[in-house]
Amino acid sequence: MGIKHIIKGIATYLPGMGRFTCRRTGGTDSARYCYSVWLRHLVMIHQAGLDTYPKVVAELGPGDSIGTGLAALLTGARKYYALDVVEYANTQANLNIFEELVSLFSERRPIPGRDEFPEITPQLTSCRFPHEILTDERLAETLVPSRIQEIRNAIINPDNADESTVKIRYFAPWNDSSVIKSESVDMIFSQAVLEHVEDLGGTYEALYRWLKGGGFMSHQIDLSSHGLSKHWNGHWAYSLLTWKLIKGNRPWLINREPYSTHRELIEKTGFDIVSELNADDVSGITRNSLATRFAHFTDDDFKTITAYVLARKKA
Image (cartoon, rainbow, N blue to C red):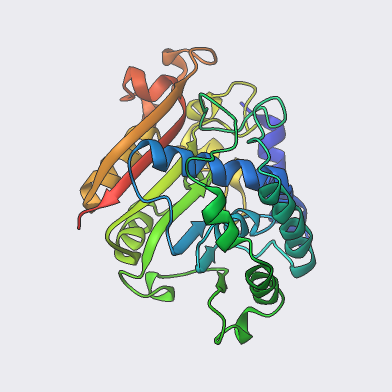
């Protein structure tokens, strides 16, 4: 029944306990992790034949740093928008990660793999540095010292970057789609974030509104229980009441939606799905353990533990 998780959830209602139950997001406090994530998205976009040189990039849920967005800027993006529920990142952490990212790109380091980050996805057929995407000519332009300093200045003081060709904006919390101008973004991405979003329909509609015609979104979605059950799919066995107790007073947890829900909403919003890469796991709970709410799950719903989806807004 998840007694320990229920106790933790109830504890979130106690004064001062919220900061202990939702303190960290994990992952993006590592420059190598951010480097690996951004290059994975670039590789997937390249394989689908889409533009790997987006100028305006937005990220949902950057987490402990905006390191993945900084990687996007170092490879040519001019504007980066970070959207989160809670602002976790701080300037010094971002600067530290940025300096390491500069070295990683300058040295054309291989993409860190699952030996270093066991749960990172999507899986790539090769972890070599993608020279065919990030050519020496391209990096000679994006890593020029004056541009690196512009990015550094934007990290330190984004509000005074009006005269710069590089711009960073951080929205936390973002409450509605008006925070970003309609049809102004080339690419939106997220890494293990959309499983935490409560209003999935409204979020996909916002992403559609922000993207230019022909713009695209690249998302890796983690559909596991995130440690809230001893089984990877045990979160689908909890009743609505049990889940309410587990969530407690936390501003976010996981939405427990299967990939089919994401796919349906993506297409309903008006996107064309360009590519998908799902990973299956047949271990865990059995179908007869599913809570009533999830009894309708297809076999694909039941076994899909992670999903990568690349979708494009019609031009």
